[in-house]
Amino acid sequence: MYLHRYAQLFSSLLPLGAAAIPPSYTIDIHSHIIPDFYRDAMISSGYELRNGTVLWADGTPIPEWTIQEHLSSMDASGIDYSVLSISAPGVAFLHGNPIAVELSRRVNEYMYNLTLLYPKRLGAFCLLPLPNVEAALAEIDYCIDKLNFAGVGLFTNHDGHYLGDAHLDPVLARLHERNIPAFVHPTVPNCWHTVSHGLIPPMLEFPFDTTRAIVNLFFTGARKRFSDFKMVFCHGGGVLPYLADRVATLSAIPRFGGFDRKEVEAQFRSYHFDLASATSTPQLAALKEFVGAEKLLVGTDFPFVPGPGGKAFIQGFQQDGVFTPPEIRKIKHGNVLKILPRVKAKIGV
Image 1 (cartoon, rainbow, N blue to C red):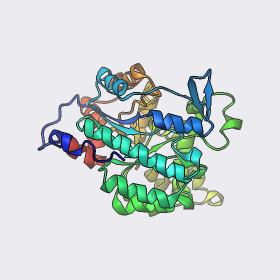
Image 2 (image 1 turned 180 degrees about the horizontal axis):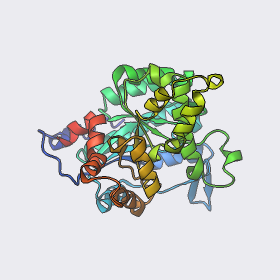
Image 3 (image 1 turned 90 degrees about the vertical axis):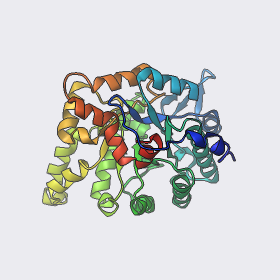
């Protein structure tokens, strides 16, 4: 393995002390890598190559990616630092088998080497070999203790096991015990074939699966039991800002649970949300009312959203006067530095 290949060579590039951060400094919490070996693993598992070149996974085309294109897109979009992760389907297509464990480790060490090559530009959320819980717990400890990752990457469901389901409780418990931040990316529900109506799942199924996971975390009591770690959800929280009041109202009815609606709403508002594909004027207004600028983060979703799209997201939340200049600075970097202390330490602020 290549774990410490660059450690000595690039150690001198690590920050030596704190410095003031400029107002324009921008941190992208939502960007992805797609290394060739990961693409090859998807093809080997049976995912379709259309026309011999375009890889499709669970109804979604998987773009090409290189680290050079990633860095160039960051520069073009005015992004100073990106936190890397793997997008859907993660390794769920391997169902937690030994290949999933090996592939997760290889991906994580690949990201680690990138963070050593570009310590002032890149961080990472580790990939877990879920639904294999035992292996996932070992990978959490490895990535946090050995690789110094910013946090852990999760999906809204792992091979049908949703966040909040008892099967995943040991993972949430570990994050809770160690106060490890989690970045939650949507993926397809198992029924996506029958409900997507031929549309690519990111169009509708991803935002609804995000909402489904957040709601499940409440009604199973999982988030209340495991609350001592930050959770970031993508795409402005899916449709949660629009459905939160409906969920809270119905859940307060005795035959539907008799919950305290204020408790429901408070838990929903405790999360952070990135703004990838969530910067229209109505979306921003809803998010500002729902959680405020203090819970919002920059996300580009590169390379699934090409560079110009990510740049448009960054420009989008700064227009129309929805947020004040101090609020914009919070969204660009202030909020993420509060929830990802290892990123703050790396960039030296």
